[in-house]
Length: 176
Image (cartoon, rainbow, N blue to C red):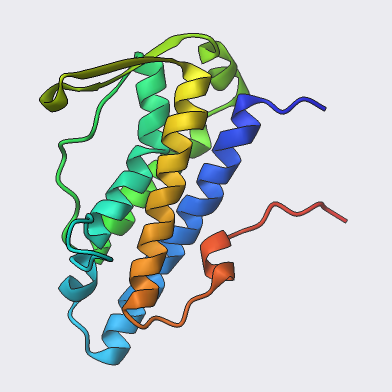
């Protein structure tokens, strides 16, 4: 059985964005229970030269729904929209991504196959052409998982009792 571009991406985007959205709920509860300021999580980093937690969340949305929008436009650029500075804003960003992802159909994804998508970063004079499927599968998908994993790791590093099941989110199991 062949797998479509839609099947390779959209259900997994929804699964992981849903899981990370749940992690935000847990992080908010954790802060309240432990007396930790929200900002201590929002600005936490794994290393000084890495982006903070809120940017990890921001990039999860950008490399899922934002990637789809980029493919649709034929152009993907790093977002210059600043990330939310609180859990409510981060949740809203993921909720908006989930809303958009739920509207994508297999026909939408099929339509873009073979089309050109340019990844442009003007500050670095970078302009790379991809096919839509290579952009999504070799650039945005790895970035999406990198940022989801990094967000999870930041929360673990801050002492939250979360595990792999929290990262995986709602599995797509076979109906009995």
